[in-house]
Length: 132
Image (cartoon, rainbow, N blue to C red):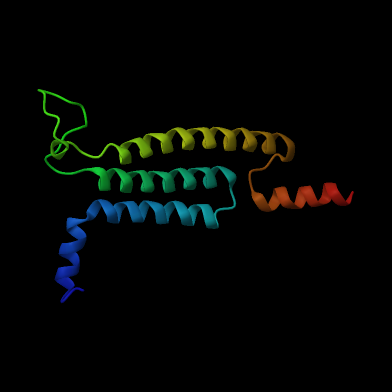
């Protein structure tokens, strides 16, 4: 493990992208968990997505290698990065945009019906409708 506090800081400084990814995921998760506002929950989910995408991209990057596009006749795979993490991130972004659009459209419908974005207020109004 780490022999001193300085070793820990050096290790964190070398892996700052991973640390930033974890912090972004944590911020998004706490926003998603503790916020009662529906729009803030959507923003929290998008921040979580960003942290995951940053982590995937950072794991797929290899210093000194290029994008997997054959140039100058070089076909050796040692010169190129792995394209799978980039493809996963692209697919994730498309899915994330679609899910965000659906969530926002549902939030608009809820606001039109209950005139609030607070989950507690929506639950109370819904319970009143059921018992009336």
